[in-house]
Image (tube, rainbow, N blue to C red; front, side, top):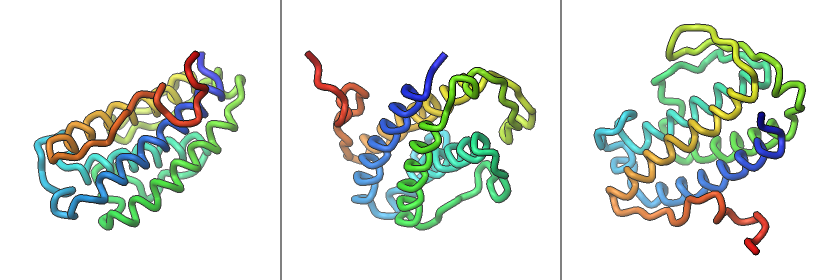
Length: 169
């Protein structure tokens, strides 16, 4: 089972990577970000939007808040700078949330309704927190591929390279 320390590390890694990705994406025109590149969510913008949707949904679920206003496939932020600003606050919110996880909460069952599958699931909370961070990494991998195709380089993406970690011996 994971703990709050692990979740906090993953939330900080998420923030670090998102800052790098958004900084690189900011150098593209809106048309370049929105161009259909044959990816699952079509474009760089579409993939960024999906990550925003999923992270927002999990943050609300774990915080006991309503999912009202969220729907799969809906463009949350047509404006890139507004999306980038919300990404910053969302990442901060995820860091705060991760710090609140207790061993008892992580071990307990958590029920949620999947909008994508139209089913309700009950799983130990720690597996769903793990999924949140795994999902982010999965789609950021897709983003780095799309970005490489347009000539953008985001640099190191390895957790071990994240600033603020203890230096290797």
